[in-house]
Every structure is written in C-alpha cells, then in structure tokens.
Amino acid sequence: MISIESVKKSDYLKLINIQKSIFNNQVHTYKLENYLNGGLIKIWKISTTKIIGFVSFYHVKDEIEIIQIGIIKSYQRKNYGSLIMNKIKKLNIKKIFLEVSVENSEAINFYLKNGFKKNGIRKCYYKGNKSRIDAIRLSCDLNKNKNL
Ligand SMILES: CC(C)(COP(=O)(O)OP(=O)(O)OC[C@H]1O[C@@H](n2cnc3c(N)ncnc32)[C@H](O)[C@@H]1OP(=O)(O)O)[C@@H](O)C(=O)NCCC(=O)NCCS
Image 1: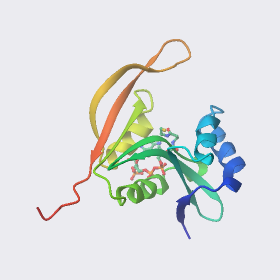
Image 2 (image 1 turned 180 degrees about the vertical axis):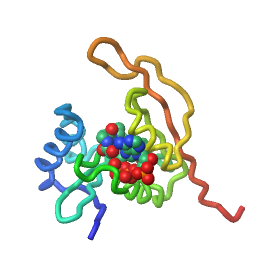
Image 3 (image 1 turned 135 degrees about the vertical axis):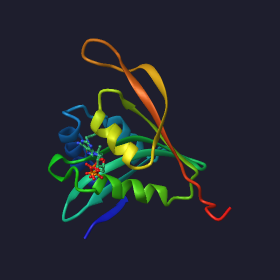
Image 4 (image 1 turned 90 degrees about the vertical axis):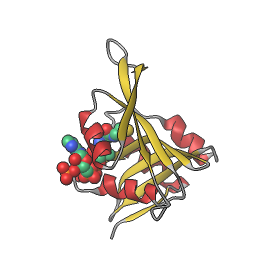
C-alpha cells in the first residue's frame, strides 16, 4: 500500500537521512526545523512499508511553490514522484511553480512529463562548485473549471 501524508515530528531523523541520501549529503535541516516549528513550509512523505520520499512546498492561497522533491534512489523511476505530484494537483490550487537547476536534466524531464512548462531562466540562481548555476523556472497551470 502506498500512502502520502504530512510528516510528523517522529519522522524527522528518517527524513534527514533520506534527504542526505538523495541530495548527496546536502541537507537543508533548517527547512525541516522550520516546518516542525509550525512554519509556512509543508512537508509530505510517501511511504510503502517505509518512507521512500518526500516533498516540501509553500502553499499560499491558490499557489504552490515546490521547494524540494525527492525519492530514494532504489525507488526512482517507478512513478512515486508522479504520485506525489498528482496529489498536490488535487489541492484547491490554480498554479504550481518551482525552480530547478539547468544541470538537473532528470528532474526537468520529470516536471515536463508531469505537465510543467518552461517559463524563464533565473541567472546564477544556485551555488555551484566553481561558478553559479542558472535555474529554469517551471510552472503548471491547473484549470479547475474544465467545463467552462
Ligand atoms: C526527480 C524525481 C523526484 C522524480 O521522481 P521519480 O519517482 O523517480 O519519477 P517518476 O517515476 O514519477 O517519473 C516520471 C517521468 O519523469 C521522467 N524521469 C524521471 N526520472 C528520470 C530520469 N532519471 N531520467 C530521465 N527522465 C526521468 C520520465 O519521463 C518519467 O517517465 P517514464 O519513466 O515513463 O519515462 C526523483 O528522480 C528524484 O528524487 N531525483 C533526485 C532528486 C531531485 O533531483 N529532485 C528534484 C529537484 S528538487
């Protein structure tokens, strides 16, 4: 059985380890702490018999900004990321947007496959090893009034 639900305080350590394994030890623990302390960030986990991934995002009015989405390596490319995205799309929202590194072609493919469109570049958005890396801005408009 697959479930997607909000992260609890007791998931914190597991989530840090998952984040570390997916993002090569770059962990944004402050984001988890902010979340657990009742901040604006929301985090959902996806689980089978154990937690296999997560998504963190801001939900402001009818828009969602995805901060980070990750599925542990051995479970990637098995549709779990798309399941998370489909659940986000069911919220009462009009738009999802995010930035992704121009170098992360796998994630760009993933977002395009999930209905996102490119709508701009943010120059030097990410810190790289040697120089700064551009980000692609992607967004997905959700038409809730399909009968109109
Ligand atoms: C990006 C990520 C969240 C996608 O989740 P996933 O469960 O692996 O993706 P899905 O199985 O739902 O893939 C759906 C589609 O996305 C594309 N895709 C996903 N992973 C891909 C990869 N490694 N290479 C190329 N295309 C990919 C494919 O079009 C795929 O459809 P297909 O398998 O029928 O061809 C996951 O691979 C991941 O955690 N990557 C590392 C972390 C990361 O880069 N996160 C995004 C930036 S925050």
